[in-house]
Image 1 (cartoon, one colour):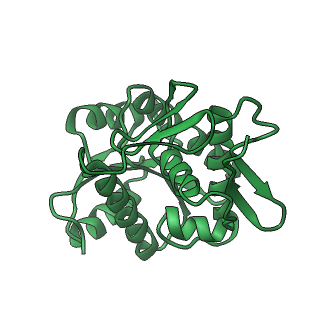
Image 2: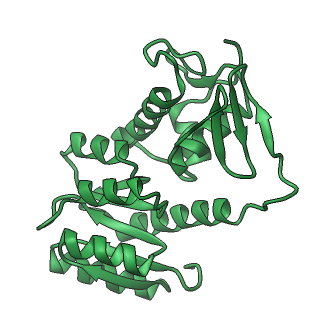
Length: 239
């Protein structure tokens, strides 16, 4: 069941795919907006403020990569789910590194797409509606690292670090459970809210790498988010 009054922007240049997505999303209770090229998609995203964007990467006039980069650089946190060709692994990684939240590969089942749309909307709603008072507030999770769960900001040595929503959620999940190792499958279930299989697990690796680049003094030798070979990732509070 779709959340009430949620609007999905579809940015896709293949008319038949747009028609299928529009029909199924509206049948599931969502309102939809459509754009058939990148420039129109970015304009609608800025002016109409959709609740989620389904974004093809290869578009006329402006690529999905450029749209994603532009929105994130402007501080727009709207959930972005990329639509990618199955063989384009590098495209998935690039999109995630630019700040996309999720991806689904073509051809996709509508049931899976609707599940991912719903999960991303729920995650975003929970974060956006977090109370300004009565939450845990600022907490030091390591010697130089702190998280303010009221403002959803992360600080290292007193300086703010700009994280995407997914990066913040992954860091907070691990930091609240220091030294506990989680497999990629467990992180997918706990942070992404649904299970992945196969190469989808690469999403976790990309997000961890982005976090390390932003948090760690030396990302090649991480002190916060560490790898337990053959087991998974964990947050170390020891520096």
